[in-house]
Length: 343
Image (cartoon, rainbow, N blue to C red; front, side):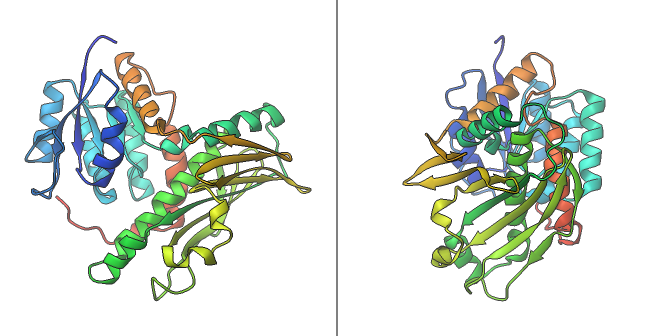
């Protein structure tokens, strides 16, 4: 590696300090140098505060740095286009944007500028899904026609404290949609990664909102998709108050992101969670997998290498980001969600 890359963070909330900062501490060539947030009182955790997003971009442009988007979903498109216009590489939290037309524009911009763009979907680097990808390849090889194979995938959130805060005051509609959006993208990304598929057809996908956050039903988004190699995918993402956790289909046997693959006769493989460890069930045999806490670090390493080698990322590039984002935002009809003015 020839040089240090200075990173500028747009958004200094939970994703920034809980996930991203710890993930790059051991990568010497990446320096968390600058940060911007509309909330002036938020903690910066040692990075230099920049007073405006534009100033952050100009600083990164002068210093050949890179932008990390840990900002709210509804400003991702605007911030992405501005950064790409100044020639700045981007490592973005999901989603790319909130409507298909914006994702189209981001993809066009990335392809025309040849800049590095990665989506930070750490689920593709989780140890259990890397194991599932290995087993899937071992069983099915390079088969292009997997008609009759079905996959169930989902993402569970335990957000009891968040629900309590929202119940006790404040707007929850926008946030509630975004939890479903993020969970859906994680689940779909895991399946596309395991099977090397793309989405062929999106069926009728449902979004059900209940009058009370604390009734017996979780907030559910669920529906079917057809993948390019003939696989039928059922995707579900549930937002579950902790108080109701025992009412939901064996939640203790599920990973936060789970995948189950079946044919007409049997379950071929699925992820489970037991005593804090991940288990991959495959054709009657269980593989206990140590949970990998370095998934996001590995994506950052790929981001760094892509910049220094001036190449398209091998993981989570703009095409992958598009394929696992657009079907979800279209099914949830995110275009109808009012956007908050956060800048």
